[in-house]
Amino acid sequence: MLKNIHVFETRPVNYLKPYVDKATSLGFNVTLTDTPPLENNKLFKEFLSVYKHYSVNPPEFEIACFARYFAIASILKDDQPFLMTDTDVYITKAFKNLHGFNLKDTFIGSEGFDSRGSEGQISPHCTFWNRALMNDFIDFTLETYKKNYEQDFLSKYYQSQIARLGNTGISDMNLLYLWKEQRNISYINSNSTMFGYGIDHNLSSVICEDDEFKSFAGRKYLKVRGDRITCSLKSGKKMDMALLHFQGAYKPVLKRFYLKRYAKFIHFSLRNNYRNHRSLKKLSPQITND
Image (cartoon, rainbow, N blue to C red):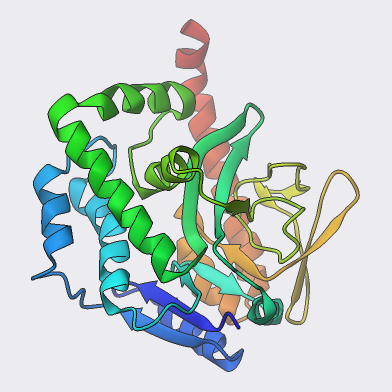
């Protein structure tokens, strides 16, 4: 059974406790790593020695994103499958359905899509692992950065990602995508209607691999009934959501969502959408001139 969750969080965030409390109430065993046991971790030290930074985010942010894999792998005690999640997520009672999922040796992650196709990144906010898969990903990450330390080939890749996505960086999300492609990893994209467990890629992202979600105020339209949250797709399909990802701008309102202050959430959505439209208007002359 898939009942173990690993969470890596070293920041004081107000939505951590509501998430852990709810996951525990649904029968999950949550292991929180908040003081990473990496001081004497040989593999992580090796990674730091060859890491080169390509990102609009500061180095400490990107390094912390990579650190979670090394930290979690170092405390695994058996080969049982497990989930690794971020803390900026809201889970419903439907999340409990994952108990019965048979992972085998398949990696599951959330691959981003837009109107042009895959973004070439896999978000780790709700990923499915076993020890062999995680160790293999760490091995691939070390191989990649060792090779790049000598050849600097990620610099060219970084420029291609900027051309594709704008402000971005080379992060663990890129390495996850490259890993599953280059190592031919058995893989399922949770950001697809074919994966019927309702794992949201990002509240602000309405395009998935094979469909498009209906939207409201620049985010997915949500229908809330008690602890049941449903999204509608343009194809006419409905999806009961097990997890919502409050990435980026939506983090500040996550605790209120756990407290069922939905009016605050709607107001926040409208205000955030208004701010985004104002920013686009300010940028539009520059976009036109280019």
